[in-house]
Structure formats: C-alpha cells, structure tokens
Image (cartoon, rainbow, N blue to C red; front, side):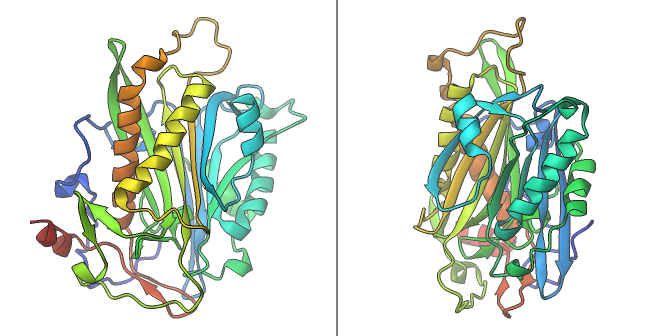
Length: 355
C-alpha cells in the first residue's frame, strides 16, 4: 500500500535525504542504497494505513533471509529508557538469539502484530517444526496523529509487509510504522542509513533503520534548530507532553557474537543524543542489533576481537544519526484526528540556516 501524500508548502515536491543535501554524517562510505538493505540478506517491507484524518498508522518489517526458530541469528538488545513495549526482549537478552523478522508498529497494535508474526513464521520452512516462537515487535505511540485506540493494524497488513519486503531502496518518512510519528517538533517516521566498514582487512556493512518519535531539540551539524527557526508552525496538542520513543534496528554482516551486538545496540541508542533526543520519562528508547551470520556455523569467520570494534561503534553512531535526519527530511505533512498538524524538516530553510 502506498502512502497518501498531502500538500506541503514548506518543502520541495521531491523529498531529499540528508546526504543529498550535503549533510551526510561521518567519513565512512555508505552502501549502494544508504539503507539497512545494503547488508546482504536484509529486506524491508511497509504497509501504510491512511484514512484521513482518523488513521495514520502502519507496520514495517525488517526481514533477514531464512531467520526462524530453527535458524536463529545472533542478536543483542539495549534499553535506553524502558517506557515501551518491545516484545520478545527477555529471550533475546537471555539467549542472544533472534528467531523472527523484526516488526515495528503503533503501541496498541503491537500485540496483534506479534500474533500475526507467529502465524506467519509457523508457515515458513524455518518454522515448520517449531513448538516455541519468540516474536520481536517494537512500537512507538502515534496517538497524536492517529486514532491509536482503533488499533487499525490487522493480520493482513502484517502479512503484506512481510510478503512485499525487498532489498534495494527503502521508503522513508511517513510510511509503514512511521506514518503517524513525530520527532524533535517535526513530522518524522522511518529513516535508514548504512556504512561500509573496513574490518580486519575486509569490508563489512552495517545498516540502521529508525522509527523516530521522540522529544527534544534538533541538532544538525552542531547547531540547535527549532521548528520556528526554519519557519515551521507548531501547535500545542492539549494531549499531554510529546515524550515519544525511538526504535532502532541495526544489522551487520560483521562476525560478532551476541555480547558484542549488545554493545553495538548501546551505541545505537547513544547516537540519539547527537540529534538532540530528550530521553524523557515517557520515552521508550531501544536498540536492537543482529548479525546475519547464523549461530553455530562451524566454518564461519572468527569473531572480531573487542579491541577491533571501535570502527563499528563509530559506524553505528553515524548511521543512526543520519537515519534520524532522513526520517525528518523525507516525511510529509500530516494532520491527525485532533486537528494537530506536524510538518517535516524543510530543506531550503535548513540549508539557509546552516549557511
């Protein structure tokens, strides 16, 4: 399903990503699409639900090839602030293993999405004999711009996101699980970025995808930027503070074990500070990192020594920061059921401000 775009007088007709504007982060090169799908074997799919003005919601699927209860991948998770419903985390923490694709959605739809994911995985070859499945589903609250209590995400929407997941460019902004999301005073949503990383004489790829929905004051190139600074109107919601959350999913083909992936997940959450995250009481800030090298592969490459992880730590900080900027720049204007409108980060005023 394709997102419905609404006119936005504050931006160009064609959204531009941070790197296209000269705002790429760090010195490491990106992958071909500057997306999490640059990691071999990773696909992404969205189902976007828009019924203006009541519903702006959806689901996003990050699908590693062949993952299942019988073929788990090494994984680690880090909770920056635990006001959230990241389902499946205790088993990931305990076993260091990811058994399913990672799905993102709206807070009150997370439980229905998890049930649909279990049904889907049981039908796959990797889940054919499963008697236990640990679905991993993350969420952010889209209640400002969508009727969250209606729980619009249904099983068919989950299956559509999984079934249409593909490699290549990833749709960003107001799509899938990002449709009703806001961050740092702007309309936000899904953003992604990748880095090619030299590691032990070889090149590996790291990719990040964010569902951005958190409070704070935006920082770009070291400068604080409010909506007023770039001519974007803001409206008080009357619905309480916009504390928000952020779900960050990191994938890599670097040979890391679960403990090292947990260290990577921590840095993913730390990266939000670079763009001005407030880490407030009501924010669910989570990082989930997984490797595409299956667990228990006898002939696989040796795990990277901890002392060699610094370049990956730098890569994840840069990729997450750029992914958040992409989510703000590629979003569309959305007006929700309460009459509140949120606008994306406009490119021309931003570039003028940065000089």
